[in-house]
Image (cartoon, rainbow, N blue to C red; front, side):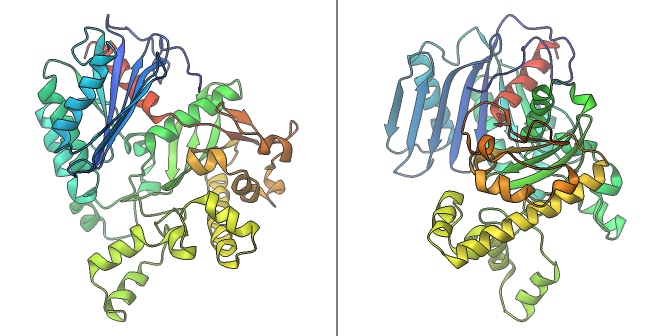
Length: 420
């Protein structure tokens, strides 16, 4: 299990005035799913972990694990909506003696994907906050509605309990205007909120700080390039604990090659597909978000399967891998230039934590920048943060398992602990 810093301090190092209750329930509500974790902030322990999927279908499933006993239970059958899903979760927690009615539950922390420019830090939820999140739906039509559903459901079940929104975009609000602005008409951009917001912010925040700890230094002293490589993928340049650039933009489509998303693309491709290909805007949206990236290139978006195909001599899989790595290298180089000096490059998320060939290929040929991996260290698998660069490397290369749920819980507990 990933180790965590003492919960007696907030993310910024401020002393935490802890409330008597010490547990935080973290909810990540998707359009047809509900992920959750219950954490005890006294010792950083997980009390329960679970997932409700296919909400609204006849084949719904709830999978719940009690950390204290290690027991995993499943419920299969129709779960009509998020309200029913959360009630089912509450029932499972109660069976373990850690229900939503427990006096030890301090707060519920909600992942919210898009906070725009307005939300720059974790925020105690009230009706005005819900209204603003709703106003942001046009720039996050797939995510914010589901996040709102989860919040409203939880508030209905526990209206007396503090509930906190933690925004994916908040960590990136420290970007300077010259990094966040697109070079389009400023009045139009402001009217329609067009700018780079960035995503995966809770992961980038957690990993950049964990990397500093791995180096035995304070986050304020370290410059880190974070590569969050999952089915969705993003890079960030973090100077002294503050994001100064990130690869995702107005939406999570921009930037790196991803599992099913194209990443960076000449905008004129869209006009071309519309005018010459006769495709509708919805068809183009589906193409770029769900039928592109690794999947569009070779028919697979699982890096393990792509690597297996490469080992068998599959040229299509090899090309997809090379395109993926080429884009990674471009961002490493770009963010090296942005930061000026780099102390570490940190790989995280499913691909970043587990795909040794991707890590090796991403820094291959970058010895002039002080980047290299030790083949033996890179081949080691583990759940702990670790260095995979040679001991004498000028720039550390690290594998740092992300923990977005912990980050949400810590930010939630810190806010509630301040008596807000």
